[in-house]
Image (cartoon, rainbow, N blue to C red; front, side, top):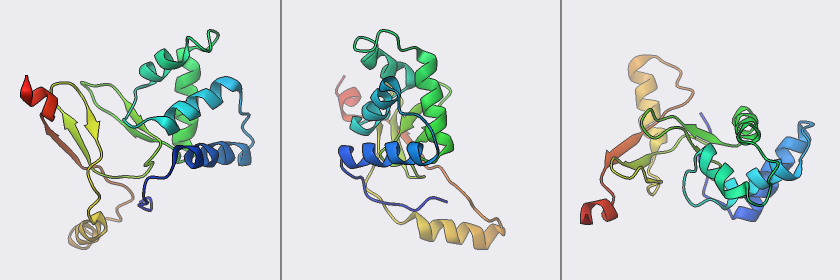
Length: 151
């Protein structure tokens, strides 16, 4: 299970991701750097497609495959959390790349990170009760965001 931490500044988060890839002998191409920057600057949980759409105008040679390959590499290195949703498609969180709760709007698909509460205690109780060695967890809450409630 990942260590929970507080959200850090986008510049520092970008530096961390670049350093992790370089330390593992991965090249930082201009397109890969652009994907990393888009992730570190993101205040939400973008999809691969939305990252691609944001960057393709500035990087016309970029392909959606490049975005997916970069996301998969970051996932393997523990630098991005992939959130899999059948109805929303996969979304990615590079600012909190460790298990944490999410609140998801069932109407528009908006995803929000609520204030952290102590999941460590709940996880420890689950391990004691079940005998499992819990390595990861996912806690999602579903409902309508404020904007969709007003519609």
